[in-house]
Amino acid sequence: MAKPKWTSAELTPGELSARSGVSISALHFYERKGLIHSRRTPGNQRRYPRETLRRVAFIRVSQRVGIPLAEIRAALDTLPEGRTPSREDWERLSERWRRDLDRRIEQLIRLRDDLTNCIGCGCLSLDRCALANPRDRLGDEGPGPRLLAVEGD
Image 1: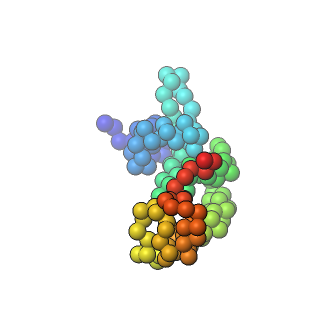
Image 2 (image 1 turned 90 degrees about the vertical axis):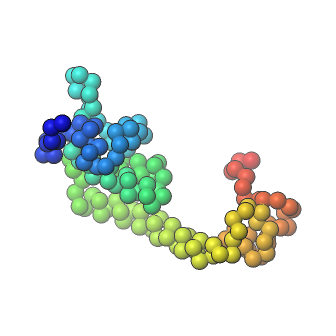
Image 3 (image 1 turned 30 degrees about the vertical axis):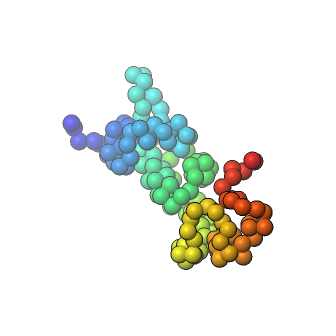
């Protein structure tokens, strides 16, 4: 197989996959979700703009820290089309998320620190459950789990 030309303005799915470390099926999934875009050649083959490399990297990092795809898409929609996003574009986007990420970090720290007191069974009747049932407030509602129901039930 010929070595990919990383300097070309467009990348094939295989080239984008090799360069980004993301499988071709994942790239197609990202495209179906509106996270990245391609154009079709006259032979109906996908071609991705070179700046898609940065977008894919952003998607992967965002997913690793637990950001939902809908939020990732909304953030990517604020970036310019037709040119590689600048440092200022990325800084503006990251500033938008700073408050939410700080909140998530605080929740994870609280979970880590309180996890030894949680048996994780869902009964939520322990009088010392600091995570979901402080002072056994859910015990007043009756026996069994209270927080496992899906919203709208």
